[in-house]
Length: 430
Image 1: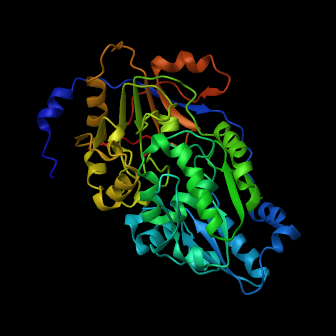
Image 2 (image 1 turned 180 degrees about the vertical axis):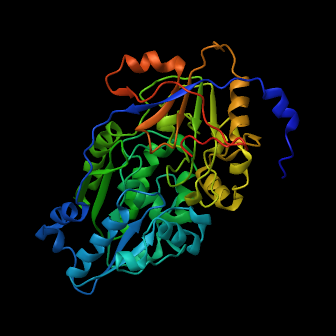
Image 3 (image 1 turned 90 degrees about the horizontal axis):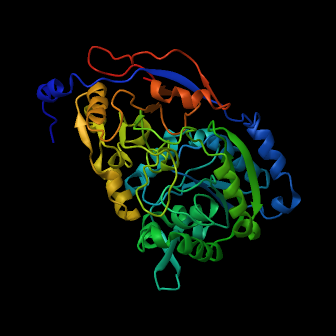
C-alpha cells in the first residue's frame, strides 16, 4: 500500500495549533544494582544450588524475547556458574512465537540484545521443535521445547513484571517462561487458544505440566525499577517457584515505570517496539490495552505513535492501539514478524493500522483536530520517548498546575513550541 501525497490534508490541518510544551522530570527511587555479576554470584553461592548440577550435565538457560536490563550479563554469569560445576550450559530462545516463529528469527532476537555465544560463553541452541508432555484439564495439549525437555537440567530465567493483557497471581515471570516461552509457537498457541480471559487460570496449570516433565532445578528472576534498572534478582529453588512468584509480582508492580499524571487529552509516544514491551508500548503506562482483562495507565482521548524501533525487527504490535501514526513508522511494518504473534495470542486489534500521516507534525495535528468535548484553548498533552524511559517527559501548559502540586515532579524549563525540522519531523526526543 502506498501512502499518497497529502497536500490536501496538510491544508485542512494547517491551522490546528499544537500546544506549547515543556520538559518535566518525574522523580522515582534510584536503587539499581551497581555490580550485577557480584550480586548474582552472591545469590548463587549456595551449596544446595551447586549440588543440583552434576559434572557432564547439559544445562539449559532460557532467553527471552524482551530487551531486559543486564540479561546478557545474567546469562553469562549463569553459564559460568554451570561450567564451574563441570557441566555444559546452553541458551535456548524461550519466546513462544516471536521472531517470526523461526529458528533463525528467534536467534537473531537474542543476538540483537547482546545475548551471543561469544559474550555468554556458551552455545545458543535455537529450534522450534517441541514434544507433547501432557494436557490441561480440558484436554488441550501441553508442549515444550524438545532440547529443554531432553536436557539434564533447566535453569528458568525470566523477568517478573505485570502482564499487558490479563491479571492473575502469575503474569510475566518464571511461570510464563515455563509455559509460553518454553512451549515455543506450538505450546503458546495451545495455551492462548482459550483467550486471555482464561489465562490467569490456565497459565499455572500449563506451567505445572512443563515443570513436571523437565528437570527444572531453580529459577532466576530479575526485577526492574522505574528506570529500567535491575533492582533485584531472586534465585529460587525449583520447588519454591510457584509459592514465591506471586509476592515477587506484587513487588514488581510497585516498581513499574508510570506516568504520574493520571489523565490527558492526547498522549504522544515517540517510539514503540518489542524491546520496550511485548505490547510495543506498555499499556500499564499508556492505558492502551488490547484486551478487557487488564486496566490501568493514563486515561486519554487520542494516542499518537511516531515511530517503531529498529530493535522491533518490523513487529508493529501495539500500533493498532494508536489513533494516528507516521509514514516513517508505516514503512517499517513487517506483517510476518507481527501476525504470528497476533494469531498465537488471539488478540488482533493490536496490529491494526491507524491513520497514517506523512510526518510527525501532521500526525499530531490530526489527533488534536479530532478531539471532542475538550477545551481547545487549553489542550492537555503528554509526550514520552517510550514506555521504559519515563524520567523526562514533556507536558503542555494546561498540565503545569498539576505538576506544581506534586512533590514527585519537577518542571525543567519554560513552556515553548515543539521543534520540527523542514520535513515536519519532531526534533524533541528525536
